[in-house]
Amino acid sequence: MEAEEKYYRKLVEGYLNKTLTKRELIVFFDLLAQGKLDFYLEEDMVANFPAELDFPTKHFPIKYTWAAIAAVVLIVMGVTFYLNNTAIITPDKVASVATAVQPGGDHAILTLSNGEQIILDNSAQEENIQDGSMSIINNVEGRLQYDLSKVDLRGIPADQLADKYHTIETPRGGTYQIILPDGSKIWLNSLSKIKFPLVFDQNERIVEMEGEVFFDVAKNKNQPFIVRSKGQEITVLGTSFNVNAYSDEPFTRTTLLTGKIELRGTNSKIKLNPGEEVLNTGTNLKIQNADIEQATAWKDGFFRFDKIDIHTLMRQVSRWYNVNIKYVGPVSDERFVGKIKRSEDINELLKIFNQGGMNIVLNGRTILVKN
Image (cartoon, rainbow, N blue to C red; front, side):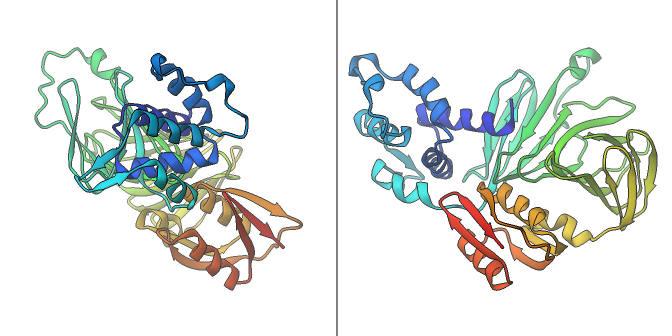
């Protein structure tokens, strides 16, 4: 199941159980207005609707969307969400929160070793998550921290530990930071995923990833850190690097900041030095000098474009603002340069692009790119 599908299901589940935070409610109604939750609401919401209310779901006119039905249900069931004793979201606010295109933020889905899934965000209060004897802290800054210092691993069979994995996935418009059990720091960009064991093997630390992830690996010369992604495997001892392995990008880009790494592709392997990056097309590896700031700008809260084409630029915007991109007519082959905060309102972002010579219009949830 893809990260977006899992995230949508958890939002619907939280909505029905009245457990969504204020930020999650805004995201919920935004996705509702786009029609992206229709299937999950029809599947779950109708099944959980009280039979005694005799809600005429089968006879609703087609013009009524699930956004309207959800608002009616809120009224009928008297569901009003009180958060922090002051913030209230009611049906009359649905229209205002559901139409605006919001920049992304700290949200993801954590899947525990027993299959339980938890929505992660930068909550107002620190949250303690338990997986057996493992304690995990989700703090107010949108960071998940694992701590094994208080866990007694004696007497636990090695094969049981090896089977305990956690997976963290970010949807469109999501990002998250993790501190792994070994102290390594991980940043996930939008539409990304990382899978790792709760207890690493004594001889190596293996994680699997998709999308874009920045790694700051804790040093341990006796326990190499191995990152497996699309068509490649990276081995390090202690270093920092960025891997962009989105499926819709033409190649996987690995950028090294500090230390050294060995990267093994399908047909060959190479070693990288700081300031270098490798482009992996799936059939060959190409080393070149890296633009470190551009490769890691997302982690620091920026878009940074240095002579990039419009398709690459728009893929980044689409992932972060959760919008569709449509090209009208031939696309310019110009290259673009700039640095913009990812917290910018999308209208301000498009205004900056247009002032820079682009011709872009926002139509609902779709960006029209014209020549």
